[in-house]
Image (cartoon, rainbow, N blue to C red; front, side):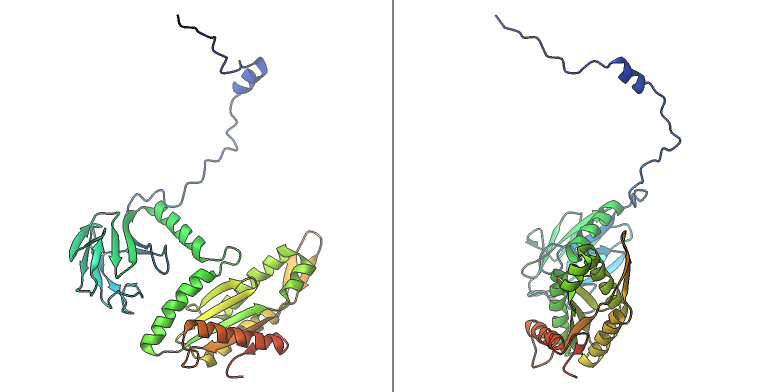
Length: 324
């Protein structure tokens, strides 16, 4: 004999007041439809390559119609500075209908597609392409929303969230690339280290919210004083780094001095609920150039750091370089 039990009530009955509320007509006068995501009207899918290993993980290349060269050569469309990658490693042939063919150009270590070495192959989407010993890129088709999301993830991984400058990780990746360029072409490479003077005092006197505002605005002024091609990054706390390709120390010193003046020449003005305030801010900077004496990236960092702290010891609000 099967024993049965009474089921408990799953829902409470609706009382009269709740029923009246449910039956009220909806006031649609202030109704606003939800904002659509950017790109929802674009159903097309484009071809992309995304770096999965090595430097610049997450960086994406959109493949348009035509031929794209992959390799170490500076004129490559997809430049990969890594061991085992040939100067002219592979060719991606992208047709107007979106189909993509990859062809190895007789590279030393070959082109692997999903782990198998192939001379030429048509890509269908989802494949992993390996160039050299350990550089893997993923090939895939994306629509506008997927690409927007991928861009957001990459920027989140490479930018400082407070100031929108590049972060230290991106800076160090870029330093490797610029060092490789310098070594191949024997061209100058200069680094500027920047530190906000007495930043702890600013935080103590005005609070961390205004301290954060000062960080953002110092970055904005310094970037305005630098060039478009310069790599400006937050290196940690109130310290920043600026990498200048094909730039001698003389020019780097001029740019650093321009940054210093842009910060010190006029106060930073802020409005708060309690009062308006003006904060006078200065920076110190150290400039170093990659050369035979400081021929490795770590040596360049150390020399720029030494010159920065020399500027601090000499009274702050100044630029120190080999020229001074």
